[in-house]
View 1 (cartoon, rainbow, N blue to C red):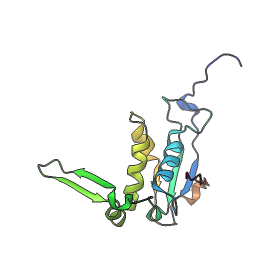
View 2 (cartoon, rainbow, N blue to C red; view 1 turned 135 degrees about the horizontal axis):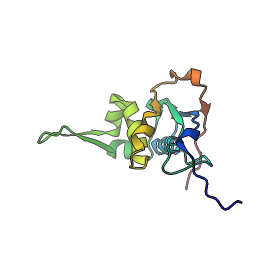
View 3 (cartoon, one colour; view 1 turned 30 degrees about the horizontal axis):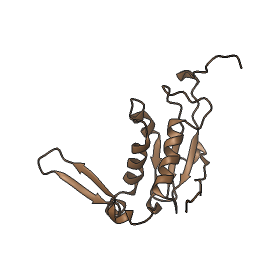
View 4 (spheres, one colour; view 1 turned 60 degrees about the vertical axis):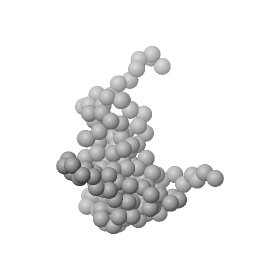
Amino acid sequence: MNGKTFSLKSSEVSREWVLIDAASATLGQVAVAAAKQLVGKHKPSYTPHIDDGNFVVVINAGLVQLTGNKAAQKTYYRHSGYPGGLKELTFDQMMAKDPVKVITEAVRGMLPKNKLAAGRLRRLRVFVGQDHSHEAQKPSKISLNEKRHG
């Protein structure tokens, strides 16, 4: 060791494309894997103030699952800004309306709340079905950990 701390420069950033298949996976597993790739925490060159993350393609967003009774209990809120303008949807209603938003919001919640978050979220691409428009980038498929507790 030379005793010097490595710090990545923004000109040295290299990004890859990764593919996550959300079929038969839980929402949390998909969101954790995507957020980790977007932030770049898996890389030895990780530097907190530099955006060194990868591009992430999530397929089969319509097949993501929740455990237990969360599908009926989990609620998504939004507000129009007007008095009485609070809207709420359950997970099942949100999946029927827009499965892409379910994954996007889960990943957004797991990203650090700082100035780099918006740029990281722009590198997330979510598709409802098996087909996606990023075949030319040759994304490498990453497997979700199948560790179960209990």
